[in-house]
Amino acid sequence: FIEIRGKKIEINGSMSLEDIENITEVPSQYLISKLSLPQNVSKKRNIGFLKRMYRFNMQDVRKYIREYIKGYKLLDYEKVK
Image (tube, rainbow, N blue to C red; front, side):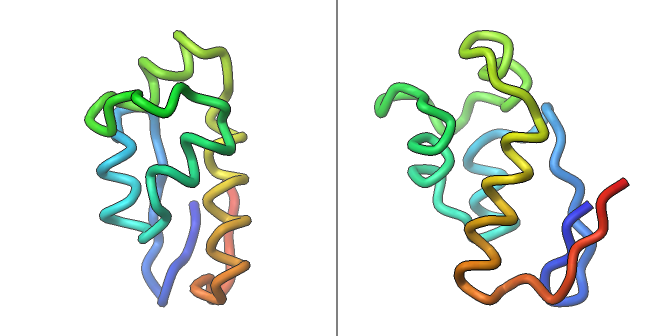
């Protein structure tokens, strides 16, 4: 889990890049870049599909979200389960 402004957020494979951007305020383009995805990848594709196709894992996705949030001071504190 990631906690942003007192709200616990679970990032999972059924979420799209667009969902993640809307919930966390982390731009899809940031994740696309960090995960080395093609620039034209659909933001509506779910992460589970993309991770199988481009061979990354959910821990990477969560790590990059935390990295971005910490850089922009949006993260109150984090809890990982």
